[in-house]
Image 1 (cartoon, rainbow, N blue to C red):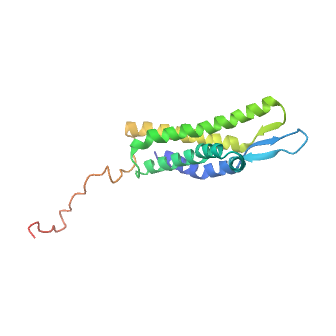
Image 2: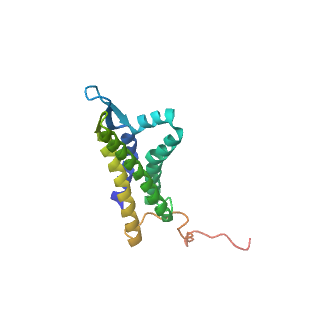
Image 3: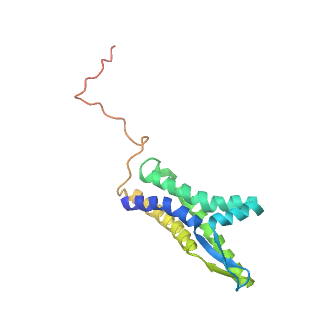
Amino acid sequence: MTLLRYANLALLILFPIAWFAPLLKAGLLPLFKLSEISVVSGLQSLWRTDVFLALVVTAFALFAPYLKTIGLALVHFGLMRRKVLPVLSWLGKLAMADIFLIALYIVVAKGIGVGRVETGWGLYLFTACILASIAISILTTRQLAKGINPPARSSEDQALPQSDPERPQPDPRS
């Protein structure tokens, strides 16, 4: 479970790097320099042209994976109940939809043949972060189901503290 905790915490650092890393390089003509497009630069363009699509992509690309990662960290450290794991798994699937959307754009752009599109290292990093998050979620669920190294119990799961026999107790009659 400790390895899962550290891997999940690493995602809190890697996701923002992936958001600013170049997902793809695109250009209109093969002779001109290619423009690098990242999640953040793509969102900036979307906010200027299509606010609804920008909201959807922001939810899928930024909020869903990061909220899932934070939620898993809270579960790992016993600060959130395990009952939220199915919701966190659902958030991971929403984030995977964003990877599909990017792949679809690349296929369409290459199929039209008007310009040139190359994948950037950020696409691989972003995809790896999403897949790692899904794997961490699955492994966490399995380990908790088996009872292997469960995280510290949350305050709601803990029993009431026992009184210390060495410590004098107040008189109940007063």
